[in-house]
Image (cartoon, rainbow, N blue to C red):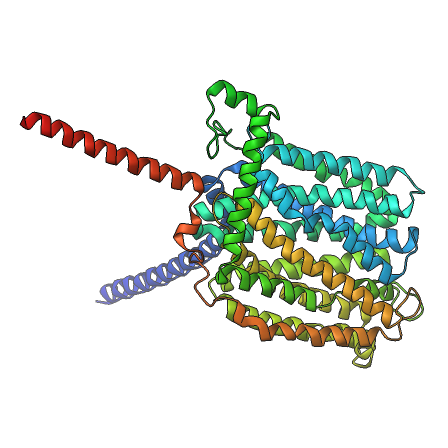
Length: 543
């Protein structure tokens, strides 16, 4: 009897042990499952950008995506960051100009960006050797290499020649920009659902490149000087040249236009030389493009956003040079080093990158007008950080200058990027087919004219308030005036459409090219001829 009870107890204990073991096994498997799920989630998060790039490459072409990364990320982002910091110190320490003068010269070097419609017309209407885009990438890269070699190799270059070289380098970047913009606008029209993704690709590439460029810019300027940095800028120009070599673009097989019709031999001749017939066609295409642009600009859906884009930029005065001179002044300012200035700009690029990511993942479906209202309001409020810094109110709050400037740069750049992204998407949707590069360049030219107006008006304001290389007593007043003017575009938001940002804005008939209309007309005439022929055959058969 006792032995049977012991056996029952042992069986019960064994079953209890088995239950404990099973619970431990289940708990162990549960922890392993959670760990595996967490690892899978992290892997998916890291893999998502790769899948996004792969999707864009499959929908367009990998050479197009590479072109965007090279032009926006390396030429404009990284190269633009290096150029900006080196030019700041080149004007201040080598040429020794006043901040108001530096603003004027900065505007002069941006003139190639104002004439972007010319580059756009060339890329759209004047193919070289049968290609609309590739030769202009080659030209842009060549101009960039030559101009940077000139300014980097001459240590005592006259100011006028230095401005000329910087303007030529800016022209090289602008030509590459308008050419890749034409590719982006063309793909936005052919893939309207991916228009926001394409603008996000451009913005993310630019922000990543600028982040890297600003991070190392101060170090390079300190080690090899501003002109040494100009020598390094030949590398982005070479990469732009490579884009022209490998870009996937169909060769134009027929250049006939309007009333001019060519046989294959004449076509090959025109594609490879500037014959009178070719120039006649080009002139006709220029006239037709100008008519198409004028017709498009007359639409309220187009000219109203254009007016807003210009005024919102021109009214927001740019006084950056005055702030930069104050940053590096040892008496009145915080006396930041070259490395510190580069790091500050890099933190600003982080803010711009966060703004692009935030727009892509959260705000890209928000109506244009609502998003621009909040971003413009925050943009004006963020300017008060500069006001507090110049009056040294941050020190009264116990916040060091460097930490406060980092916050200022990151917040301002993030808000500025959020303000700029919907305008870029809107601009890409205003381009009629056939002249995408030209019209997008026209829209960006309007923005650049606004930036030029902002820079020159800001320089005039610094001159009136007597802000010089060593005098900064009225800099706070210039900042206050700028911040008040930043609020004024809120009164112009009625110019921006409220519609769905993923929908087309232009009427469908404006998105068709002249060639498509002629092809439709010829098909209709052919159908009428076929109908007449069938009716004739039927009538003969009845007889």
